[in-house]
Image (cartoon, rainbow, N blue to C red; front, top):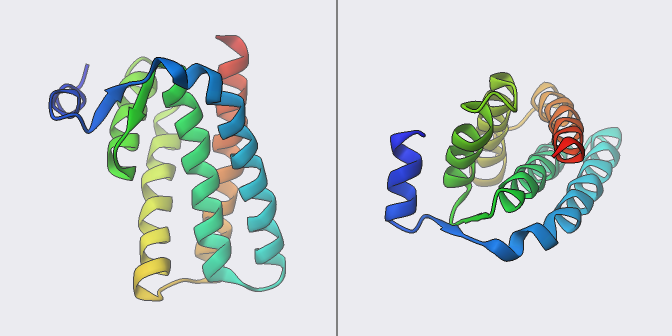
Length: 143
């Protein structure tokens, strides 16, 4: 297990959350709703909000995985740390999906806090969100 994951547990940036298993379907539903909204915003040329909403689809997909594993995050960064440790390192999720999540996180922050966004960035995050949600649903169906 990654050292950063262990440190996050020690510092309570990630905490045990046994109730999470009961919230997995809610998180997947939120991921789907955000994905649909991101598609709509992209179609209307609202690239900033398409980027942000597509990222949140990925966030909820990742959170569904984290909840299923019995943990809860205290920040977006530690959600990524946990996904890498619990799913990528264990070869249950492809590394490129974690890279996509990291990239989407950066593009969302740029759009949200700095007003930096583009159509290509929005499309990229939307495509990543689709793949991430599909992977999460497929993985959770097998567990």
